[in-house]
Length: 181
Image (cartoon, rainbow, N blue to C red):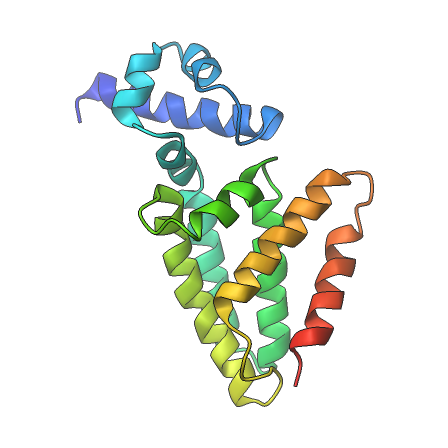
């Protein structure tokens, strides 16, 4: 990538993070391009779809979630490790209004750029879930796909009630009562 193209790419990512944080995952792409000082065509050359832009924005958070799952993979209490990681997923999905919905939709569209983000998360979560199952702390019929959908649903519900800051934790606690063996 040429130096000017690299600068445009970085400015677009920076402004996308800020704009998505302020306005949600459905923020107008034209606004992001304007803030980055480029035309909409430049944005689309770098990120042909909204999902690809969202995916690029969330690579840093993805790396943090994957790193955290690696740390938790050796925890003495596998179920507690799984719960801690699920809380981190909920926090991530709740960072940007509309992200939880986009992630839920992406789980059904394997060709989506966001689905490509979820695959490494799914594998990391499967390792944590497997350890909790082996320890007899989680039912055998619980899948990581179901848990990831539940975390997105919890983040989506919490997004709808921003004044109730404890809602996500309450909903996760209710969910967890249903997965334990």
